[in-house]
Length: 238
Length: 107
Image (cartoon, rainbow over all chains, first blue to last red; front, side, top):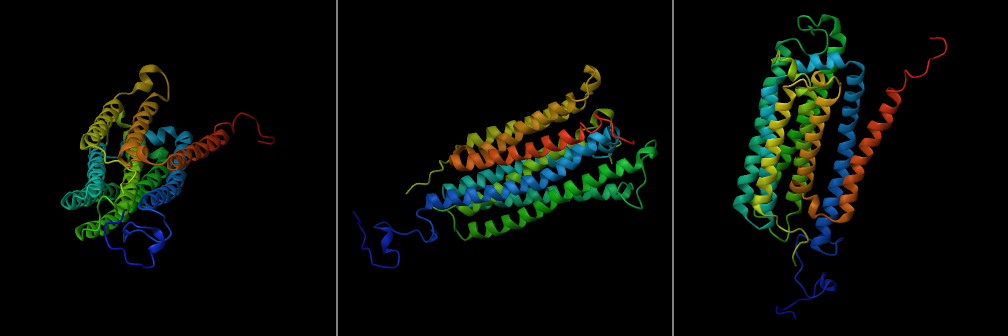
């Protein structure tokens, strides 16, 4: 029941319907293409789970060995800033989800607005992180030659440095993922601005969104495990 | 041709968002108290913090990442990923936590 004139071309074998230009030749349909891309992204995210999982594993082992140093180390972190950054990432996950939804319904302005918000919130997170790191350097809490244990904790200096090492590696690798996410979102923003996405094709927004949410999930675990562990002891909070 | 992924209502996302913020506030609030000392255990604070974190992560995965609306194959892959993580933690701690149980000759 083709109501349009169908000229014979390379895609003729696919049948009567008009061929979506975004459908790559190795997929049968747009649905299949989206499903395959989503599955592929999740397989990548599983490798990311394993990557961060190794760091969490190191955290668990050393925390079991040095529970006291873990409590005291946690006290050196800034809970208000950490909590604020948790909220910032949660809001950015909301705007990301709304951007994907806007793409699904073909709302170009909605995509642009929510992607810009997502990028701004991600940048806010990194700026707060910068001030936290700077404070750790100022207070000589960076492991290495210039590490100075806080007053009263001199005896556990080596173990505190293990805690601070894991703090810097875990939050640092997380921050690196944020930088990648912001670059990724800038590309998606450009594509959205060009009007590339709509109900038939929003795979790049969907798949990049999965990455962004994953980075949020890592922080959801980092915040209580690093910052809140020694919160009840009262903070030296730098 | 429609896509297999239905468009979720705005309210779904805002409800999940509210739940995530409440969870964050709750974690911070609970962490203010030394429940371990109150109940003479060593694990209660961490258990509560992790329970809230797992609920928050599940909400993000199921709704924001839309796994709820994905194919069964994708769901299995997601679950398998986290299951493998538990194997990593489980078997490693199975080693570390039991090392002191048996004496070592010559030590």
